[in-house]
Image (cartoon, rainbow, N blue to C red; front, side):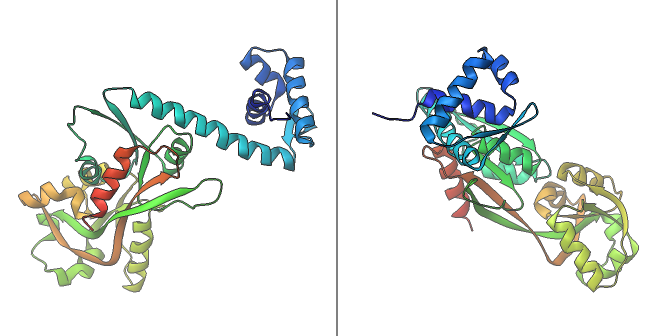
Amino acid sequence: MNELNFHHLRYFWAVAHDGNLTRTAERLNVSQSALSIQIKQLEERLGHALFERRGRQLTLTEAGRLALDHADAIFSAGEELLANLRASGRSRQALRVGALATLSRNFQIAFLKPVLGRSDVEVILRSGTAAELLRGLEALNLDVVLLTQPPARDAITPFVSHRLAQQRISLVGRAELVGRRSKGKLRELLASEPVLLPTADSSVRTDFNALMERWNIQPQIAAEVDDMAMLRLLTREGVGLGVIPPIVVKDELASGFLKEAGSLPGIAENFYAVTMERKFPNPLVRDLVSAKLSQI
């Protein structure tokens, strides 16, 4: 019976990711010659060379790249199985959530509200950049990632993006900055008062810049901020008028501490829950996404 030896495949997988035979042998605590033999046997079984040597570095051949894609899928599925089976044996189930560092804290709380405080659920919340969080999702270190833009999907990284909400973007500030102007005076405010903006990589900023061009306004930028919590604090301090979703400052608006000058036309922020196609998805994620979608 001529079956694939998964022990050989795991050694190949380790070397392919390290790109260096010596380093992998040291990490796995095996001799370099033994590791070479294992890979040679795998190549003989597959009928193709998997590596090309370039100095001390190993470069994958076309067959090697194909083998690595399959090995990634195989060993990721194994890790996923172990994680889910371990979770099923615990009295408390873990929910591992990644959230964009700039994402509204109020939105995060609203999304997680159905499981917060449950004695049988442990919520583990991480923040970071979109790239960092998506890598964590691919590595099965996260169950769901909360973003403001959907990632690209392809056959290798089958992300699934669920649009949960869309929040309008408003011009918000201290009463002394907003003054008594009505919503029809947005242009006047933007032309005369300093503004607090998201950074250039934000879709909100892109839409804001386009609006300023249409209105022929050169805004006075007081600060560019990549963190929504900091944008909220600067708006509270009266540094400028914040270009911000009202949900981020809902408590300040309700108390009258901040005032909404009006919604900025054509500008909105979308919120996505991003998952991956998995054989054993965390059921808590499905419940949370379904609960949020039912509110749309």
